[in-house]
Image 1 (tube, each protein chain N blue to C red):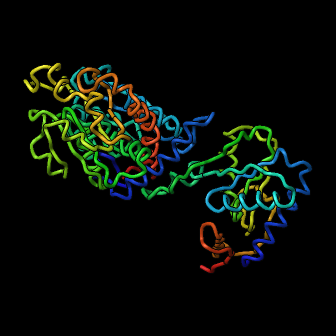
Image 2 (tube, rainbow over the protein chains, first blue to last red):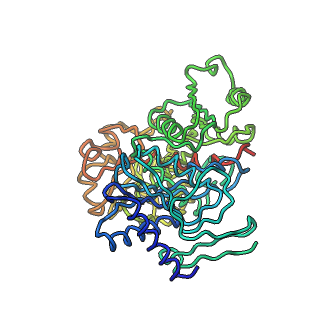
Amino acid sequence: MDADRVGRALTRIAHEILERNRGVEELALIGIRTRGVPLAKRLAEAIREISQHDIPTGALDITLYRDDLMRAAVAAQPVVRKTEIPFSIDDRRILLVDDVLYTGRTIRAALDALIEFGRPKTIHLVVLVDRGHRELPIKADYVGKNVPTSQSQSVQVRLTEIDGRDEVEIQDA
Amino acid sequence: MNKDLLGIGDLTRDEIYAILDTAEAMREIGQRAIKKVPTLRGKTIVNLFYEPSTRTRTSFEIAEKRLSADTLNIAAAQSSVLKGETLADTALTIEAMQPDMIVLRHASSGAGHLLSRICRSRIINAGDGTHEHPTQALLDAFTIREHKKRIEGLKVTIVGDLLHSRVLRSNAILLTALGAHVWICGPSTLVPAGIDRLGVRVSTIVDEAVADADVIMMLRIQQERMHGAFLPSLREYFVTFGMTAARVARAKPDVIIMHPGPMNRGVEIASEVADGPYSVILEQVANGVAVRMAVLYMLGGGQDGD
């Protein structure tokens, strides 16, 4: 996927979100660090352009909720970054945003993390790429692109805000 | 990171910055309605305290609980230490019950190193004699960085009982490693021999030491460790070395005043300074929890402490 197709996928998802949610007042976008955060901001921007509505956005760091944290032998721990959700999630319809959906374990951790902030009305999942190979019963509600992969491959999403350009690349191991 | 945290020397520069950055994230957890994350679920942490402590023990315990660890506190005053058990035997007895970490406070310098050699658990030094108190120095650095946005190039003046202070040693090592200019000041009877090898400037004149300081850190006069005539009187100490508003005025206009606690008001610090606008003493306490959470998280990896 090049920059153009990433942009079009996000615009399409923004339209789908507006179509499926009558009234955007209760919506909030929460991006999973790292690359879910700029994606959530871009979706908020796209929704504002289409509907003139501002949707609050937040950032969620799921490191402390990972299921593989304390399992490895002595190794460097993954870096923990800040969770920033500057609004109450109670009774909101949350759109959880991430770049790649793979095993589903990140989303499991994100749900646990999110629930501790309150009781949202609903949580829906938005991903730019769904590459399959789920290990948990989790599915995305909005998908930019389904990309069939093998487990030996890796999917790299690059975004301008972090990597200087927009692109999705599949690499063979 | 090493298996244990016994002193600041165990940490590289990058590890120090990693702990400070992680503490930023940990602080946010303390502001939530539910102040708890599941990270250390199933880990057992023993807080083994051979010296009285309010803030350090409470701070560690809150940090452990916010990370979901199971904690228990052993205060030497109520334990079999009174029946004559040695530190090593107590530690091995605790080890037999399979804890993951031991947080140790002890009056003897090097107590943590002894445990480190004989224990499988990870050891965190919460103050050993007059040697080191690494988590205090880390939380001090965190507090300084928050106010000054940097540590490199700052003039940090540490005033007080230098001889008996583990806080001084840990801070001098950490702050010089991060590029601060550290001045230490106290009566010559309380200046440890060879302390300048840590790369600090030694002065016995407060007005000179605090001039243009970015940070003033006060140390407690530790009478419980003084087994000799170090000071003519506490009153005289206050007159000569006590931090008063007049002395603070010689520092930079945006100076911050720190104290690791507990304070002796009217001995090393005047109440008007301790409660004054430059004081960040209570922020230090608040930051202590976040910094200790960061340390526990970063040491907590691995199923065995080997």
